[in-house]
Image (tube, helix red, strand yellow):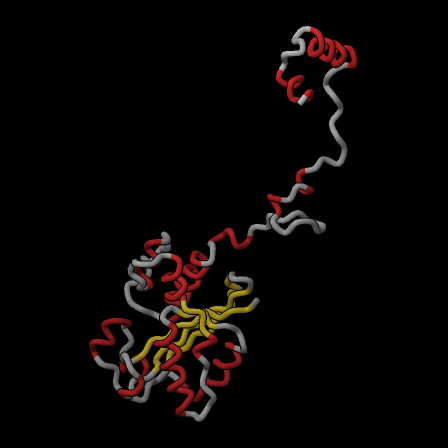
Length: 231
């Protein structure tokens, strides 16, 4: 199963105010694990970056001036996404900005229903906590020491680690079911615990006979099993 973990950095909070995407970071997952295939681009937003936004991600007008426009990388970007589900932390924000860029180019929007939002998974799994990426990473023991500022590729990497924890961590790779068919619940399958051949008895025939004689004669008719058998 192919999924893409996806994050953006932008010039502001709302594309309807003229804000643009300035960084895209995508990480490919196969069966929930990173493959090493990434897509990462800085973009010229064709506008100035507000100083308060630069303080969040560190991206300046000077740095972005020679970067490509979204229109120049859109085909490569969409090809990398393919038709895979998109794993995003706060999906509505990133999808809104990317769709604004696509609309400028008269391209089809990305449906929000295509996104797997790690905030929504966290709300269902651990209600009543703080759901920022930093807070959830700390809760699951994910190292965020490199996150001195926001960055699309770094945040996508952290989101991938958080996603793995939210869906079951390393246990998602365990195979407990018996091989060669049988019960799907593995450890609860009786056939999985049966020996190919029964163990040999450890009592000799003489010991078994002596035990049977003791039960019948020494304990007498008052023994509990005798009373149950007679009832």
